[in-house]
Structures are given as C-alpha cells and as structure tokens.
Image 1 (cartoon, rainbow, N blue to C red):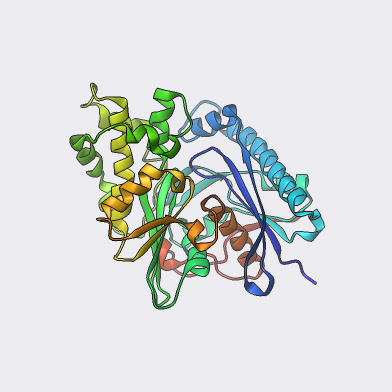
Image 2: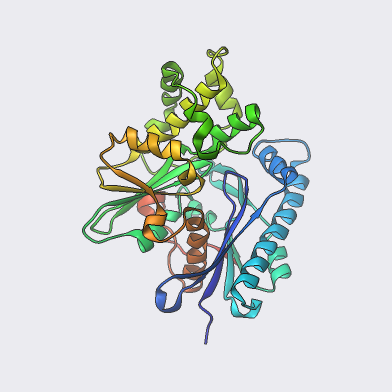
Length: 363
C-alpha cells in the first residue's frame, strides 16, 4: 500500500527557523501526526538576510547557505520522525518550500534557496521542492500558494471566510461561500516591525506587540507609508523583502528623525493592520495564522481597522495552530504533486491555468 504520510517544511520571510509538520492524507482527508520547530542560528539568519540583496561572492555564499539550510531541514525531519515513532521508509515524501531570497515575478523568476538533493541524501526520503517556479512559468505570481490549502481546510459552503497569514509578509485568502477563492500579498507583515525592534531592543520580534503598545501613532508617517504604490495595485499581486526592506523604511523615516522609537513601532504595527484590513471583504470572521497571530497588539489593531465588526482570532479556533498552517500547506502541496493534482489557483496567482507544482528529488 502506498504511504499517505507527508512531511511539510516551511521557513518563511521572518527568517526565524523551520517549522515542520507530519500529516496523513488517507482518503484525501488530512490529520496532523506531529509538529516540530528548529530555530536558525544567528549567523544563518544574518547570511540569509544579506542574500536578499546583491553582494560579493553571492553565488558561493548562497550555495553554502543552502547546504546549511538542508541540514536544519533534515534535523526537523528527524525530530518529526522521533516524535511520531515513524521510520523514513514510511514517509511518502518531504515537501519543502526553501528560503525565499528573491521574488521578482515581474521579471519571470523567484528564488527559494535550498539543496533538496542533499536533503534527500540526509533523510533517505523523497523530496519535493521548487513549488513556485511552474506557476511563474505559466505567467503567474508564484505566490501566494497557501489559499488553495486554506480553501481545502477552512472553506465552508454558503459562507465567506477570510484567512490571513502574517509572516514577514502578510497575505490574505478570501474563501467565498460558492467555492471561489481569491488572495494576494497585502504588504508587510512582521518584517518592518522585526527590523525596528532588532535595531533598538536587540530582540528578534516584539513579543505580544508590547513595545508597540507603549507607543503612539505618528499620522504623517503612516500616511507616507500608505502612499506606497504597491498597496494600490490590483490583484493578482505578490511582494517580499525585495520591496519592504530596511532601505524602504529608512526612506520613509527620513522626515521623522526625532520620533520616539516606540512610536515608530506602533505606527509600523498600524501599517500592517490597516493594509490587511483594507484587503478584507465583509465577513463575520477573520482567521489569522503565522507568527503575527501571537501579536496581541497587532490583532487588536486589525480588529479596530475593521471597525470591531469582524471577529478576529487565530486559526486555533479552527483546530490548527497558527504556526503549523504553512508547513501543513506544503505537506498538502507535496501530496497534490504525487497525486498529479494542481497546487495553484489561477484566480489567486494570475497563472494561465492550473499547474502541478514542484520538482522531485528521489531518495
């Protein structure tokens, strides 16, 4: 009997580490068997951040970073196997996203650093990788890919539901009650907030949004940031650190040199909340996943931006922990690949049609 067990691995734009999930897709349904998280060391985080832009000897540096990533991915796989009591031979495939360092669909490419051949060698399990390139080859944005999974897991006939993933970048899935799905990247999620809190407090993120909550809004700065042309573009659209990076932030802050750091942090939190809320259609509930789901200040600001008329809660309310959604999504995409089923939604990415996503690296 062919195994229905898949491991999904995701390391996102927050650059904090790799989330992994082991899922069973028996009879097409999904059940989660185990989850794991492997943090990245500071040196790897720094190198991945530097690789977001051109630099000296970047081809070799990227290859070395990819090797180190593969070892962290393998450690996550090993942890999942230990926690679940499974052996490598019982797993059909490991589906791995890789680490996005460039995303330029307007130029026809996206780059997820990874060494899937090494991962297959280290784990002894088939690896499926490079999920975004085929959609871009078909004229799509290559992102976001998770709305298809959101529809499969969270969709409900007769009711519109909205799911937002807030990682470094925020994206939204609009799940119509008639089965139609749209989605796109709304703009920065945690990326700018993380840059700012790292610079001033030496922390990787603003826990619970506590620092932001101590500040007050700078209306002029918020309006200047909201004037970014990306926010006015029609869907389909996607973005990343190629646009929302430290230089972008510095340019916006040039006229606000005397502003208190905590006020800037609060204003950045408002930026994420407002741009996400502006993308939401009328709905009775907005479910949040990703690291942003643990930022209570951000969730309050999103609710406020929606005039407190929409229930804003994490995907825990639907039975899936916020930090497990994306790794499960890639396990699902791996399952779809092996079943020769499409993984993209042209209504979301703008591709010319449905495509089977991924590339196989046999063990």
